[in-house]
Image 1 (cartoon, one colour):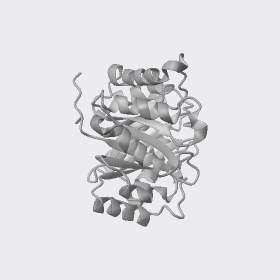
Image 2 (cartoon, helix red, strand yellow; image 1 turned 60 degrees about the vertical axis):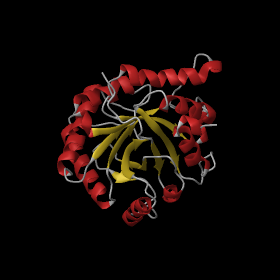
Image 3 (cartoon, rainbow, N blue to C red; image 1 turned 120 degrees about the vertical axis):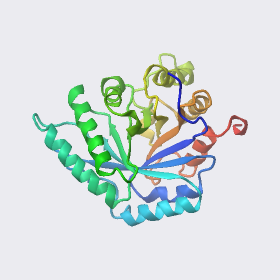
Image 4 (cartoon, one colour; image 1 turned 180 degrees about the vertical axis):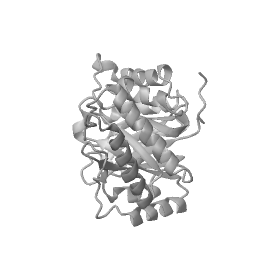
Length: 289
């Protein structure tokens, strides 16, 4: 199938749970969209989502001010609430309908309160079968779109190598794919190159397989990474940035990168480096040293 996305799009996403993101609108260059994911909203299996980010500092007023700051800097921005994170996805037997109802209600309220543009489905541990996962999130996304039809609601998915084929791809195929604006492939999760001397090529090939063989045709694909050192066991920062630069210039649907920052105070990469390196990696080939 022909690729349909605009190859000029360059998207950067970051996951934050504190107010570190407030500096971003003045740093990013050569980026067509910045996506902020509030990390995370969680629940205990019944669908009653609550914010787990720093609600003392990341307030609805702060999000509103951040959007105004981005507008003043001519940086297009979208804000998502990311659901899942380290929490496993589990639903009590026979409780799927109640889970969907509770999740739709609580997330609808959160989206309106925090001036949020959509949700990010970001579960790495899934303790249910494919059918239950697909039905719960298909109904949740549909319910939120219907409730927020006038606000331009958008969903995104964040699969990794272990969850993509079993859960996220079936979910994507089960719904109107125009509802899913972004797919973030979390490349740092369980990446194990068979040949350490060819790790860049192997990572690039793994992402190319996502682009070539899986039908995420209507969505922007981002390469997902982490600024937290514990996540670097398999993918080092140089490996990630080299692979990202190669991919965004070879595949029109690979639009940029996503980085789990959480907080600049304990991100192992110096905070000012993250946006600068990402901007450099997605910049035009002639600008890359």
